Length: 340
Image 1: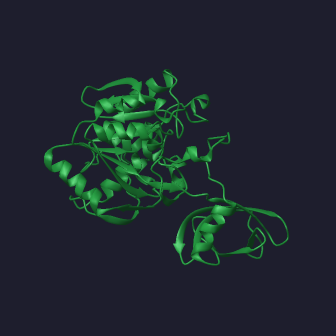
Image 2: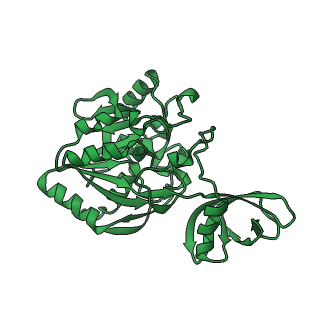
Image 3: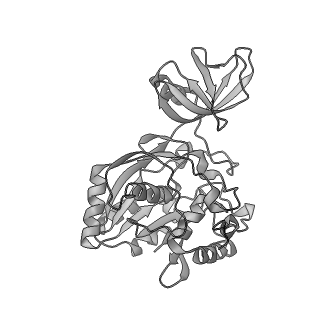
């Protein structure tokens, strides 16, 4: 390790474009599963439905219940030119932070024939604060005129936009899906329950920062975008009970890892709500998580760094070399990994 810490290049690999999944598989649980065993230092593969083999009675499976917003709106300037708005998150009182192109001179965007959105200010991050007529108007606008955004590396439209929602999606607020949970079907979740595994929920609204690779030379120089999360008391109680009896906490997604570990920064997990920019890097001591289900991530991403903190950089790179060689499907609609 150099004086500047871990180099971002350690978490780089060559991802052939043809391995980036453009469409989801059907059924959801027919994707492949790459099993990364930390103790045995081994990488094996199976089908996702076989994840049951690594779950035991008494375990806790923690899944995000966030729902992807129809956050992409196409409005127009009063002069008639088109304006694209990408809503990021609510600031309360009808104000939203958003990406905007092009910049509308005069600061007004029209939606349909009846709604006006007003530009309030530009932020230091290059985003804009937009004001809707009321808090409810933004939801109305998304339902009436909005489109569900897909990650920039997915070039093909979906025949069914709901396929970019998990079957547990209910809390409106994400601009991206918690993709590890996309693999679960109702039947598979029922089989998980019948095995004696308790399924509990939390909410973390995913932001577009999920798709941005780390550009800094050193990992420590990267600033992770904050995301809002809510970890309810009943989920915390279930996690505490599992830990007390020696059962395992299985995080479905890096979002679950960040929410649970954010709620346990003091050493003891507590019910929590708020914004987290917890950036988990190698050397981090996990306080809650015992196993992780996740997808195959972008090179140089914060997700790659997180799973390397859990399973070691060397083993993760070994697993990804296997996945590329065996032509696994990568990213949001791709195959899954299980880190044990």
